[in-house]
Image (cartoon, rainbow, N blue to C red):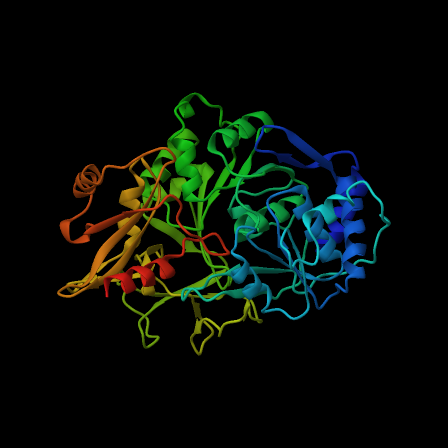
Length: 494
């Protein structure tokens, strides 16, 4: 007989009872020090914080907005919310006040935990309950429904909240898609990304549910990440391509011990082929897993490195979902032809998301959902991405996909990140404009960069103009604000 789902709050209590003194979370601070939290300590802390939240009116209809940096307090706050049946919404602490208020203001029944003047609670309020005072006794078991929401800037730049409407409960050991990504029970997981991003937040909580030891970085640093992998023998991790680039460019990376790694799961942005191959050299092809999907969870693809070598450039085949490539009239396009990517879950009778602050995503009459990505499938059903429809640059009648230009820029060791947008051009319609974030302390020579790009792209795809920014702006979900950058440059060019 299959087990019944267990709430996330109850699962932590069960693990605290099973092995109270075992370490659940290690926080790796930027100064190199570490702070450790046992299962029993996490359980008691979450109970104390839950009573604090309950006294502020938090219950099953509430949303708890957590706008603090990676910390043990972040986890205590999340589990406290779930123990009261509330939904969690992680948000970037670096978000400007006007934007922070805009996104939290979309929810009427909310409690905000952030170091801001108008917050309901601050991080210190959570810290003070770690070792008391407060009642740490168990609370009644409640399953949050929904349990998680994610903030997003949206393709138009307008903030919205994406709510995952399913009950926040799982069956221990029933890993399904997590297993395909390489996550298994009892691993040590490196949490390198910010917890306001969907992937680090979700994977780390899935990991705790599966009795993993989390090694959480206060803030990402490539050298420290490799130190932690070696020191704690980390086995599973989510890494965005930017993090992967910074790690492989460490001067001593060839001499480092990455043998403990069982799986590196990569998503959030296209991974340049050169970077994927480099990681395969450092670990092994079967240890690299790429995922493609969206926060709307209508469907996703997965591909392992050894499979990718046979289908270079693909993001894999759908997992527990049906994939369709459609034209503007919702007609399926021929194999190999670029169209809009639509997904529908194999067996999910209810919606996989709903928005707060925005109309629903584009949906066909048959229930297939798109968030605007473009691509094509080959004869074997493997998906290849082109770009987002809204990001496509049509230059003199030729289609240019920014992701291809950005992948070429990313090969340059002096570039930390880059985004490519189209700006109005009197004769061509649009011209290609590259906005480049140099590595810290590096000054990029534009003439040399242009020469670099000419060796990698056909002439019509080359950027006609370059711009250099110390730090590229990002939205609440951690993605570069491409639409806002494009609008600003289009306005300046008008």
